[in-house]
Length: 147
Image (cartoon, rainbow, N blue to C red):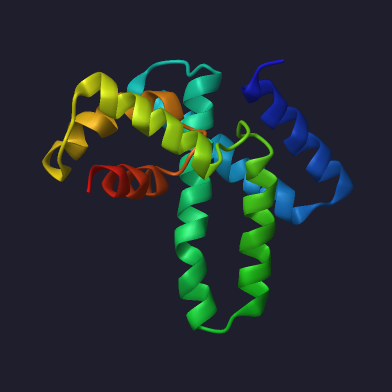
């Protein structure tokens, strides 16, 4: 079953069960997928859908500190629940150690020696970590290893 079909199936289940958090999260993810397909006129495969879901998770994660500053516990709880719902569609996330190994391999293959060559290393690393690791974390590890 494709990821797109799984989203539809889970949306129906959430609606039947009256699970508003799951329903909202899946609807927003499906909406983002459909919008990208409409804009690009391309039918996305599972990898493309995973990328979009990862962006949706990142949006929610980035919004979390704003809600925490405003002391809106109801919104914080809701956002965290949506993040957990969306994470089940993502592949297993890489650990920092695994990311570090990928980065070390990329540094040796590109011959990068200084922080000026971060872009070259990131270009080699990102296809291997896309959807499996946060780009910000990957960038921090690259910077740390090139210092």
